[in-house]
Amino acid sequence: MVETAQKTADAARANRKVNPYLLLAVAIVFEVVATTCLKLSEGFTVPGYSLCVVVGYVVSLGLFVKVLMDVPLGLAYAAWGGIGTAATTVIGVLVWSDSFTLVTAGAMALIIGGIILMASGSQEDMEVSE
Image (cartoon, rainbow, N blue to C red):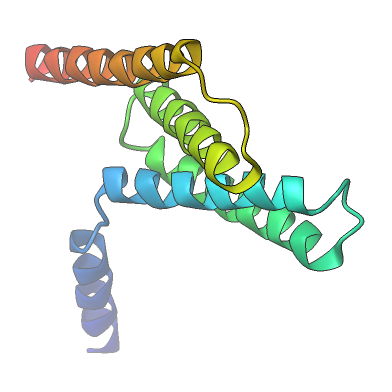
């Protein structure tokens, strides 16, 4: 009886699988927070921000490993790196007055466009293989 209940609970857990793209979004948020804290840590001399860096990257990479179980590597990494780059660029501009030029805007558009193209290519590959 206990075995049956355990199997039922295990099956229910398996059916509640989290959307891998939601996990990817959360991984990206943790990566962006960690990268922002990296700047704020002033070379790991500010303990609170230094801890934020370590925790943020550990959580981000831990989630990213889960994402890779369901999402193609190229697409996942392009989104993780590209969206993270775009987000940290915006944070740099807003918080630290980093330079934002027409070239920067064009580069961000290319990054985002590349992610969209990779996603559409991955979707086509998945449809062909089904």
